[in-house]
Length: 370
Image 1 (cartoon, rainbow, N blue to C red):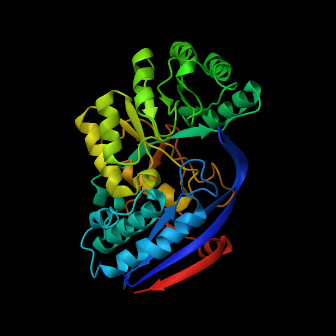
Image 2 (image 1 turned 120 degrees about the horizontal axis):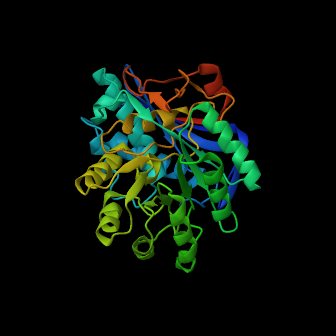
């Protein structure tokens, strides 16, 4: 691949409804889209950093800086990229900043698949034509509010339901959902809002037959999670703690987790995602694909990577209408009655920007020519 031009876009989209997690309430999505241009094709990637350093250390502003001043120059210094996996090594000496790296990594994977004339899922080694998805529900004001939201998503076709929790809005809310809706696939996501002092609470959650509890303890911890996993029956899923295949290896060896939520953006792109997927498969640790309140571009990459065989649980890859009144790509992503999403069979990610919306949501743009 001979990359001739790279374009960065700062974009903003309004959420249909506010989305609350343990550390913030989101009303809009401010993000960066990366375009990687060759002679004949454009590859697209999406930087999923937030406006604030609450999920990880990155923000939209820091990601733009890292892309502009470090990552893009590295791409242009390399005369030719024969395979996208080279990008992972090219960026390896730059510490963290995984979401900035992921945006370029994903765009180059898309470009590679388009030049080869194959779907991105095939380029990654995927083996599915459909993937199963679930829904992630933000923290609600009351348990009654939560029940109404869950009911609506079940009616839409979702079968796996993830409930965001935080202290004071946890066990009673989960109990209400279990009592009302019976044996649905139910899980909880704590976003690092508890400590080992809450072990008794998690032992109570054991009674609810949750498929997993996601990141209950500190965002950078794998030691205390091992102690918690030894004390409870419910599967612990690590999210924020895992930024690389080395993080995953250490967590598995310590017994800190029984599954990993792999977010492509959090681990630096599709190449590192594949490495974590393969490591977990070799240890019989199933994985699943997480989301970051995704726009159409990042959702497209998630769909493709979730076709790999060790993605065993439904991912956070919802329909286009889950978060947005209007997304800026086509075709629209829908789910069927079995909570399945079709995997595109056209070259690359299988989605294209809708020109007028793409420009409408863009509020800053910069081009870089080799």
